[in-house]
Image 1 (cartoon, rainbow, N blue to C red):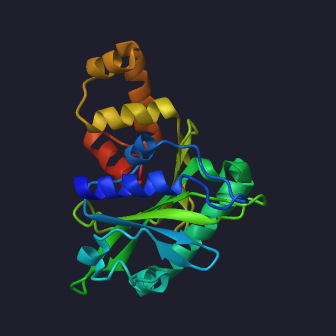
Image 2: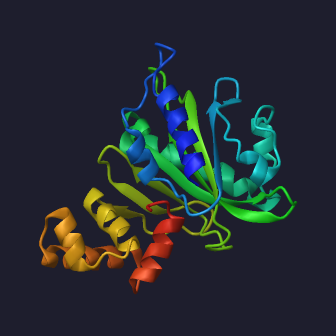
Length: 253
C-alpha cells in the first residue's frame, strides 16, 4: 500500500500546478486527499482529461488488478471492465453527482468535493469484484466545465459484495459531506455530516475512546458523546462496528 500512496503523492504534486492558464486547480493539500481516500484494499489511480478522454499518470497497480499495461490502457478499457448490469447505475451516479453539485451546492463548489460510489468490475482473472470509485476534479474552465479528474478505484470485495446503490459527496476544504444520495433505488434521506463529525468518525474507526477523542480534539467528553449520538442517528447505526462499515462504504473513512 505504501508504494502506491507514494506514487499518488508524486502525481498530486505534479498535477496541482496548472499547465493551462484557462483552468483552475483545487487548493487542497495531499494529506487531505489521502485522509479522504479508501485505502483498505488494493487500488489504482489515473488522471483522465475529459477534453479528449486521454489517460495520464496511470498507476502500475492497474496491471495487478485488471491486467492492463499502464502505458497503453485507455479509458474505454477501464469502462469495459464494469459489469454490464452496473453500467446504467454508473451513468446515473455520474449524472446525479453533477446535478447535485450544480443545482444543490452550486457549481462554484465543484473543486471542493470528492465523489464516491461503487460498482462491480472485472478483475485480471476474469471474476467480478466490488470496486469503490472515488474522483476528485483537478481542473475546470471559466464556465465550470470539468477538465481533468483524478480517479481512484479500490477493491472492497473483502468488506462487502453488495452495492448500496448510493452516491456520496465528501467535502474538502472544510465543506460538509453528503451521503445516501439515492441513484437507482428509491431515494433515501440524504445524510449530511459536518467536518467535526467526520473527524470523530475517523477517530472512532481507529478505536479511540470518548476520552481519547476528547483529548485529541481538545473538547469535552460530554461533547464527544453528543456528537456520537448525533452521528449514530444520522447514519442509522446501532454500534461503532456498524458505523465504521457504513462510513467505509460511503467514502468517509
